[in-house]
Length: 145
Image (spheres, rainbow, N blue to C red):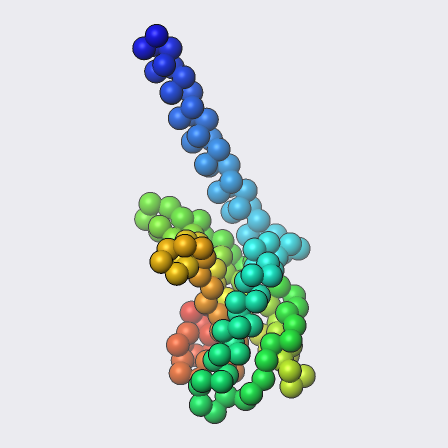
């Protein structure tokens, strides 16, 4: 019975390692495909960006009082899966945003897996071209590109 138990346990562990490797490989393959924006285009991500952008323009001096009205050409530029030496999975995305004043701007954003409030959910950092007044993401949003 012990031998049977050990064999079953070894089989389950082997199956588990195959299942955990396959999604990472699949996700890594998606990073080079620009047709489907994947998580970069999900409503919760875009809503979080729009909400935080509205807060930013209200609270940072000398920014125009505009809102994001639409996202276009959403792309996942790169996916960096979590690994032992890089414990946080990251997706780098870009798009074009239409602002309430009619102007179109570039936006770059980053989705960090498992970095939401108290480690629950994902975190989103973003930078709209021309709106990083305090150079939080270095000049021209370089950190998120």
